Each structure stands twice: as C-alpha cells, then as structure tokens.
Amino acid sequence: MKQLIHVVYVQDFFTCEEGKEQHAARVQEAVCKLRLKDLYHEARLQCVITYCANVLGQVVKKPQVREMFQQRETDLTEEQYVQVIKKETSVLIQSVKYSIHLVTCYILDVLQMCPEWCDKYQDCWLAIVRIWRSDASYEQHRERRRRRLQMQGAPHHQGNRSLPQYIEKWVCFYSNLSSNTESSLPVTMFVFSSQSQAHGGQDCNEMMGYALSHKGRATAPDNVYDEEDGPDAYTNSSVYPKIDAYRRAFRQRHGETSDPATEPLDTDLLMRLGPGKQHGSYMMANSAIDPSSAPTLREIRRGGSSSSSDIPIAPRQPSSAQMFSQFQVSAVSFVVHSFHT
Picture 1 (tube, helix red, strand yellow):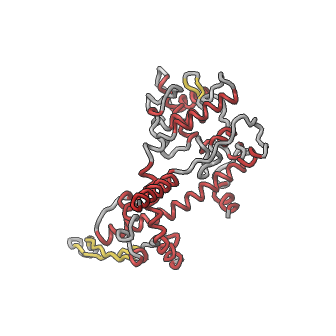
Picture 2 (picture 1 turned 180 degrees about the vertical axis):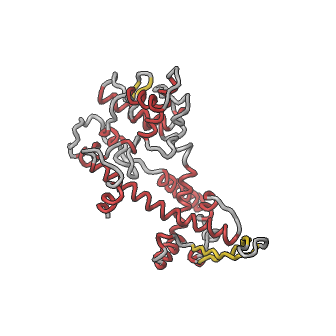
Picture 3 (picture 1 turned 60 degrees about the vertical axis):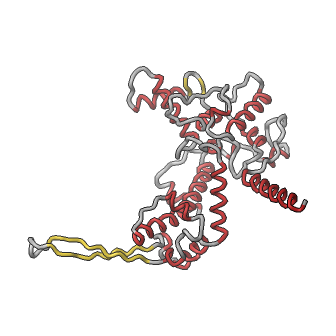
C-alpha cells in the first residue's frame, strides 16, 4: 500500500530531492495516516449536519456537533446514522410547448448518510456507527474535552503552517517591513533568499521560530524574539520552561558565549530533556526536525550518541491527564479517610 501511494500519487506530480527519498517517504506516510483519520472524523460530523439540515430543518455548526458527541442522548441514533433521506423539491419551469405557462416539476433528492468511500460496504459502515455509539467512545470524547479545558492559553500561532513554513513567513514579513521601498513578489523572494532566514543580522533557527510561534502571528509587527522575555510573553504556560531548560543545557554543553537562538538545533539535548518523544513528538520544534538526524533514547543510553553525556536524561513527567487522575484519586481517598475518622 505504501509503495502504491508513493508511485501513483506522488511521483506523477512531484520530484523528490536527491538523497531525501527516505525522509519524504516518512512524511508521506504520516500525512496519509492523518488524512485517513480526518476522513473518518469528518464523516461523522457531516452525518449530523446533513441530518439536522434535511430532516430537522436546523443549521448546526461543527462546534455544536462536537458538543452533541459528548452524550448518547444528544447524538444521532444508529438508525439515523444509516438511514437514507428522500427529499422532494418542487421547481417551477417554463413549458416548452406553451411558453406562457409554468409547469411544476418535482425533483427527488436522495441523500444517504453513509459517505461515498463506504457506500459499497454498508456492513462496515454499521460497524463504524456502533463504535461511535459505544460507551468507550463517549467517555473518550469527554476525557479529551476535559484535557482541552485544562490547557492554558492558545497552543500556538502557526495556523495550518508547519514550523519551517512559519519561519519562512516571519522572515519574509520582516524583510518587507524593514525595506524602505515597495517591492514586487519576485523581488521579495529574492530578498528572502539572500538574507538566508535572517532579520537584522540575527539568524532565525528552529528554537527561535518555536518561541515566536508561541508569542504571536508571523505577520504581527511586534512579534520579535528577546531572550529576556519571561513566561508572560508566551500564550501558553508550558512553552517558557522548555525554552529556558534548553537554553541552560545548550550553554552548559557548548559554552556560555554560545547562542541557542542562532546555532543549529541540538537534537541530542532535546531527547535528553524531553525525555525522548513524549506522545510521539519532540520537546520543541517537532515539525522542523528530521527523525533520522536525532538519536533515540536507546542510542543515548548505550553511548551511541556522538554528543557527550554532560546532560543527564531527565525523568519522565506524568501527563496532565495522569496528574488530573491522581488528583481525583487523592481527593476521593481524603474524603473517605475523613468520613471514617
């Protein structure tokens, strides 16, 4: 399947840079998996929107639909998910034979809830619907909602851009902003390429881009990097501790005069401070890191990493969901103990 996707849908339209074939294949596989998940999720959203519009005569938006997924009572029933909607619409058209008369025609619209990609496999569609309406699925939706509500501030300001694309946008914007004359698009691209991802003589590497993407939009005039920025400068409370820990470890390894905001990203440090890839992602700048350039924790423990072992591997921290669960258990234990005493 991987080979089929690569040959049919990639090589016909794109030419991979020589030596980047393995990296392109990994990115392609990750994107295909993400698109398949989105296809599965969007089908359920569209089912509810279609049913409400054509049967109930109500217009619902995606945020409202996601709220409906929290409880079995507000979700569609199994019969509603699999039913076929027949809607008759009357249209007045002019008669060909008698041009002065209007003829009423009735058009029958047949709308089925099952998407086209699953149209020929109704048994599979029924199995998918039953998974959606299972107790485990509703509990998973509620748990994910609790996690989102625990998040303090916006996760980032990249939008749908990857971190390298955000950096490119930021550099282009500030290149234009610093120019005294208006330039056309070709001139702008030339200025960007000549500056080599630099603004005002300051290189913009992955760490700086990560910091900027958690401060504001790439086109915000006041979005600049300053090492003196404290936790309040970032829109998410989890960002500053990561940046501060990386800066300290970077200077401990490479010297006090080194600048982590301009020098190449030290992936060995990220793996040590992470530790590893928490939930499949690096500690920072995940979309800008080539996995083949970063050592694994196993390689670091076995001494296979080329970097020195001056920075120890940090202990693994519990996730916010685990901490919340532990807090609930502690609270219940306290109440039970107080009741018996």
